[in-house]
Amino acid sequence: MKSSFYQYSFESLRKYLADFGCRADQARLLFNWHYKKNKTTPCEINGLSAYTKKIIYSSLSFDLPVMDHVQISEDLTVKFLFSFQDGKKVETVLIPFNQKYTVCLSSQVGCAMNCAFCYTGTQGLTRSLKTEEIVGQFLAAQTWLTLNRPDDDRILNVVFMGQGEPLHNFDNVKTAVEIMLSQNGLSLADHKITISTSGYLPGLLRWKNEMPSVNIALSLHSPIDEKRSQLIPINRKYPLKDVIPLIEEFPQGKKRFVTYEYLLIRDFNDSEEDALQTAKLLEGTKAFVNLIPFNPFPGTKWQRPTDEKVQKFHQIIESYRIPVTIRTTKGDQILAACGQLKSSERNDAKTAL
Ligand code: SAH
Ligand code: SF4
Image 1 (cartoon, rainbow, N blue to C red):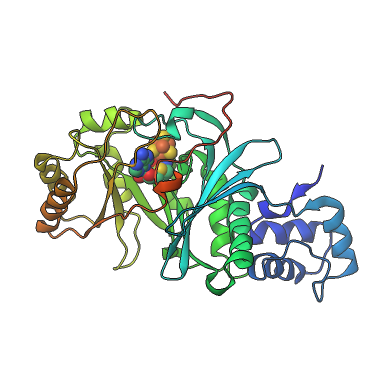
Image 2 (cartoon, rainbow, N blue to C red):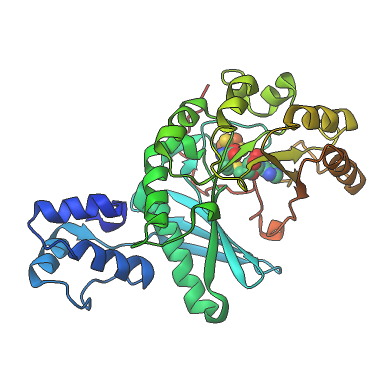
């Protein structure tokens, strides 16, 4: 069986072609064609030698994930259901903002972390995505945009906030990020990519030495360990006292922050006391707080907080001079908002603990 072109970082493609004795410039031509021009067939590339063509046609495939379903919300958010070669499916979301888009990528089919408030978490982990399946979501979403909204088809930001815990699939997420950053590849700026984590310590320990300097977001959701553990079970194994000092070391450069996502759930973690403790925990750090009112999904017992509570929470954090925003909910009409993604297939589900 052919392996996928989209699994290779630029360096590894160069090496792959060099091992076959291809000319040194061939990897750059191929990367440019597929990532900058977003084409899926290599036949028309100027300068690609007949020998390289023969090698890549006989050994590599250029298939993208198959788009099973597209849903468009009134606010123009687009949710795709993609399926892969083994029939497994994930969702990917395009979120519009000022004529440009943020793409929200999935890193796993399901998730092993089993967070109490998350639709994805309720399905357990089926498997991690391969690099080409992560990059493929970006390219397939880009292709859809170019065809359907040619006047505003730029994807400017990438967030790993779809299904899955990205740091539980470290190697493949890292290679996908390298392809996105590569000057020959998608050429995105490093501050335009954000990886959100529930605080999976084994991945965070690798981050500092191995991950390119993209943004980190930590799903905090409560500064109080007991409460956080009820929401995010891995907090019992990897508590905040181990996670926060580590991630505070990541941002490089003056203007870089750590985003702390705080999911506000009615009468659970939305009180003034919760806000005060959060502010005290993050005071003096590189925190940027993003408040996310809970997005309900079928069968959940949790509820969205009142607007007054959200505003009060915001005000308290701000009074500690910590930058804070409230995430506007987009795409909830089609269950495309944070935490509402779920594959329609469910098999071999496993949980982390
Ligand atoms: N696994 C990673 C990234 C995917 S979840 C993580 O947990 O960080 C992306 C964000 O959506 C996280 O902050 C997560 O806590 C949040 N989220 C999950 N379920 C949600 C829901 N029902 N409503 C609002 N946000 C939710
Ligand atoms: Fe997984 Fe993130 Fe959902 Fe938790 S919130 S179950 S880590 S996807």
